Image (cartoon, rainbow, N blue to C red; front, side, top):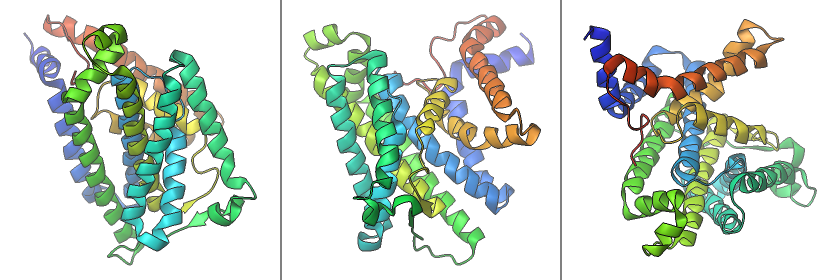
Length: 328
């Protein structure tokens, strides 16, 4: 077998470990290799990556269709900014996660009666509604209305470049904690029950799994992580308004999940980078056809993701039995 074939065999056998190591090495090295504005962009990408991890937990492993995760981002960001001047930013982000978990639980209860694309439409409509709510005159004194809210979290740094680096390490630490937590959660009794409910709810119920509780809990946990990501992203930017987290973000998060594998946790951060960097690169190539270039890049990545197991099997003579990052 050629060297390339042996390398492909290693990827097929240890793909998850290799991808995780590559993502960690790149994340640690990144702030030492790129300037401040690039660090800020990557910090935002990591925040989106946390949201994709949350979506993979719900959709990839839980089998529940959501097109409304921008709602959790928006709720988390506003709760964090409203409470931060009073209780501090860290505590405010924690409360934002709790608020997003409550919204997730409500959507999970609705999901007990609505399944499939109907549930996706329901979550998308919730995102549309929350997108407009901050502009309501009754809420304007709290949300800032069309002007939005400003907040500068206190950090041990004075220059913009130093603040960018601090934010990067803070967000990276939270992302690592959440990803590791989700990994072990999926290997726990709850994770096995979640995947059993996804595969065959009737059989899981017959074995004693409370599928309703599992599904609602998955929505709540996924919402909590997305809410935390929204709070962190707002802190990184320092400003939020009603159009900071549009409904199109839900679509981008779903696309980021799909093209990186619905059950690959480390690849979620590649999806976050896809959301932040690829539109900019596409605009640099051609401003008039930037969305066409972006769509072409997504199609290419989706093709690679779908056909990677077949390619590895052809190169190594062995079958790739699970997607990279799958812990089921």
